[in-house]
Image (cartoon, rainbow, N blue to C red):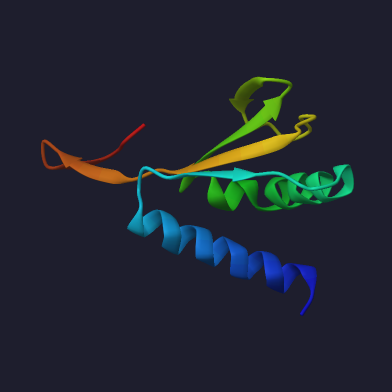
Length: 94
C-alpha cells in the first residue's frame, strides 16, 4: 500500500471520527521534520477539497493560525465544520 492509499484511509477515518465526535479537534504532527513536511505537502495538495469540511490551522512556535499554503508549520489542527438549520436556511457553524 502506497502513501496515497494510506492517506486516503486516514482521511476517511478522520471524517468518520469527527462525524461521531463533532467537537473533536485532530492534532497532526510528524515524529520527524521530514514527516511533518510530508503532512504539509498532503494538506496543501488536498486543501481545496477539504477546506469546505474542515477548519485547518498551522502551528508556528506556540501560536496557531489559519492554514495557508506555504506556511512553515510544525504541526496542524483540524476541526470538522458542521451545518445547522437556522430560519429554514442551511448555514455553517463556525
